[in-house]
Length: 373
Ligand SMILES: *Cc1c(COP(=O)(O)O)cnc(C)c1O
Image 1 (tube, rainbow, N blue to C red):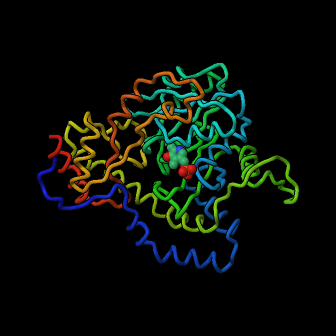
Image 2: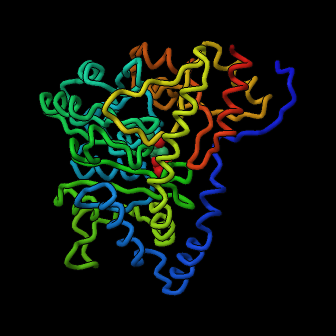
Image 3: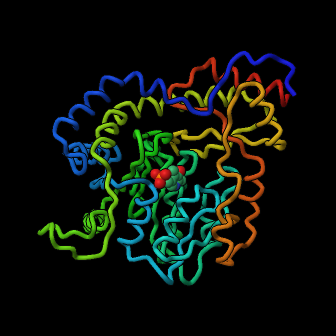
């Protein structure tokens, strides 16, 4: 128990500064959308798609309704469905595997590297089955996977490589861009992500223009390019709202600055945290977006309780590995995955956001050092 007074509270995430500093720009973006009334498919959508494609240095960007749909649309456009297996790391948000199941394919879970907690060439190889059609590499916490090595394993096995970049806006692997080693990368613009809208949103980026056309069509009811009253395939409705696109254009201009600040926040933590609470390792040659700041502690639940009493909010990403979720229990493919299962019991996500101050990092680290010297 703490014997000190709470001198400060540090939330897990604080978006207020990001919202306030650009409030005027958000208001004028909203006024513009109100003015033309094109709430779906307004000009701001194509503008943002173009800006985000440039930011990612890719040829094509397709705005969609959220990051889960983005994955599902990639899988559908690739023709992945019943009878296919898709390898997904067990350490990811549920949505990665959910998208696989929603196209009728089977999610097969891989273990992760013990240092980075990411899928790696060995864990991918161990998870391949005769029916594997694709693998989804998840750049979890913002740290890119070893894409060159994964793409070699995928090519050897004849399977398609997809990137779930929902946590890694602006991250770079060995100076290469998203979709450089994969067919497509998917993004979420959920408000808490590094590039967050004021509601749901998502995007897919790719350098394959025929895949891009197929994905755009699926996201718009399978509508024909030539005639909007003709539907060539059964698609679905998954669009990025105009007002969210307008918000995202404003947020995108701040992303490099916010990511640079997150990297500084990581450095502050790395200097100040005690050895009893080490951070998850950063592999060389990768530039993380530092979406989440994940540390490990033997007595994780006790530490979280004590930090909460000291005014510090923490999170868990993720306490139940995907292959242990009840939703997948019926699939009967619950092999033990020892690294991810051990990690799930000891990981704790510490506060980080685009403008977190050094004083706040100091406070969190002082409390951890006091509680777990
Ligand atoms: C947030 C997230 C998603 C889902 O994105 P939504 O926009 O919430 O649908 C998928 N994968 C990962 C790794 C995520 O963090």
